[in-house]
Image (cartoon, rainbow, N blue to C red; front, side, top):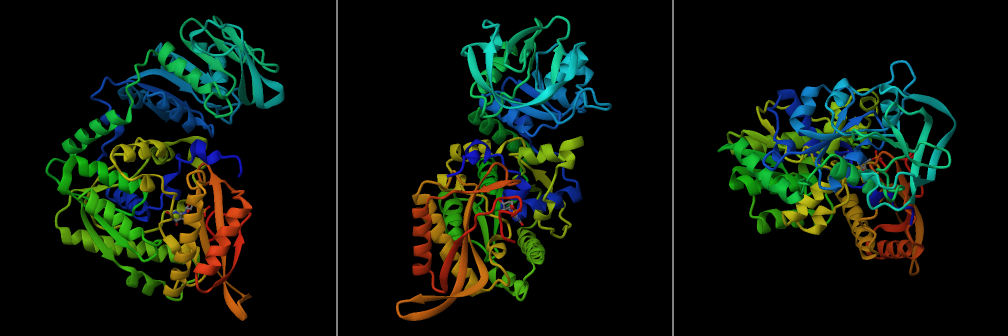
Length: 561
Ligand code: XMP
């Protein structure tokens, strides 16, 4: 197996790209068009408990979101806001402290982003990380100079101020992860060095007013004591109590949904994916039958997917589900279509039509529920480097904006994917559903190269079933970002018994990834690949050859289309 990066952050998927909820991403667009009311947020949801939060000021580091996740793992609510966010956005969070993130800029460059004045004027504790430490240094009167060499990778941190509350319960030396070019030449007045590494005499600095700087990244897994340092900062320095728990979130969220919806009606698209499932379940908990879920089967789902989803939501949870089998309609529209983007467009459009037809039958509806997650909110609110890093919008299958005057209900808006999974489990959803790998909205259509036909769908379902089954048996399912079969349009000669065969070539794809933006092909054990291959050629008629895709992303993409 490759290094298991997915374990670390696979939960932090970029929803738009990876959720597999074609309907949700499409409706996000609709809702924007019609300018829905402000949705219910987790921010409001924690308001009942004594509200406390840590705010991460984002300078564009690739790890900024990870800082927020780590803080939340310490049971303290944390939001990420761009470095130019106005105080009005910060104040309602009732921050107990600030963390300044890393970032790609150099503080001495003209126009380099700096921290807003209110950070310092608030007199709250501040922790600057990497670039954030350099920002502190520059703004508080110290000196930052370009390092003679870049420090990248592992370093050993030696504590010189062992009694600092930032280091409570830490060993005297530990491994940390560095990634910087500039260094602190002179600390600002009032600061003292607290720890050092071989190349950074000032790897940690602090003053008596609760302001600290770390030259390394405590948020990454390569800094084993990093979470302890963050925990010390939020508890010992900022005085947080730790009231961000999934139980609190669920209770508060349910009461906020009740308040917001009143006697109104809510519709939600259900796909069986994690986000739409958790959204439906939490709203159902809050308002019961005022929620109707519409489950459109576009005929491009995997084996048993429809039955399993209906079982959970209709039978076990007793929800109002409108199930529409629109397979024939979609297949008809996909006839003769081979271009991947055209497939996406057709499926997106048709999906909206079917959904609208069904929604209209319900009569007056007030809210549209969506599974928007926190990473999407951050991306769309971001400024500067983060905003320009937004990619892959083509996966937001372009639907036709409908004239639905609906308000948005987005109860997961402030959650990371791993938190959504915890909420799902706490609400009693089956593990199988909560830990489902991402599945693209256009479904099997983009895993069949060329025209989509009933016959090919059956072949691919058979092959996919074997892959999923074997990967789960090998206990690798959760470690992999995705694992699936692709039906190519290549046919090749084979021999079975005494007969010549001429059958399809199936490709197996299995990748590890943190966020689907990059991915590494998974080093699956040979005997597992052998079992998958044997079973596919024996159990799936029409297939006589199996290959394994050993390309990473980039240059390939995860899906073949
Ligand atoms: P690629 O193939 O671009 O995929 O490396 C990255 C992630 O996005 C998923 N994907 C989609 N999800 N609609 C979706 O909802 C789409 O059209 C779509 N195309 C790709 C893919 O499964 C992977 O997780």
